[in-house]
Image 1 (cartoon, rainbow, N blue to C red):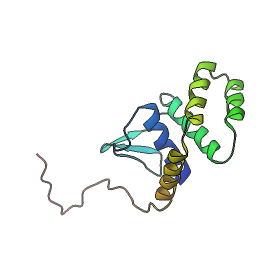
Image 2: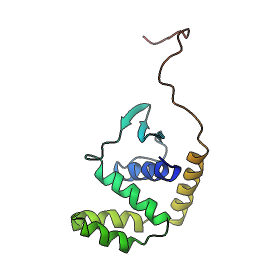
Image 3: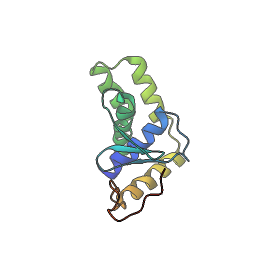
Image 4: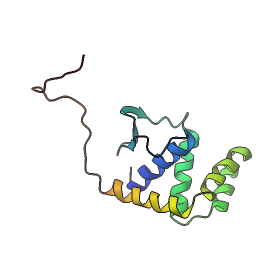
Length: 128
């Protein structure tokens, strides 16, 4: 996933699931979420709204107007009520929120970390 994909998906997850900006949320390079320390894979069928909203935001950032996106969604048989809600989210983004989103894109672009998936053999675990 690109830094734009990751930042837009993070924003969409926060909007769809009404998550506070202070909640720990991180999108990995392979599209999984680290949400408050838990790994949560994205399921395209059940997370349709968040994934669609993330894609709409990415298109919005690249200059595609919401009206064009609305038309395309309606043509692809997405219910009008759902399209209205999605477009309202995109149209309601403030300039400050867009600035924070661009900062998050830059943050993801500078992300060189790899996830720790196993404990080193010699490390002592203090869990109980």
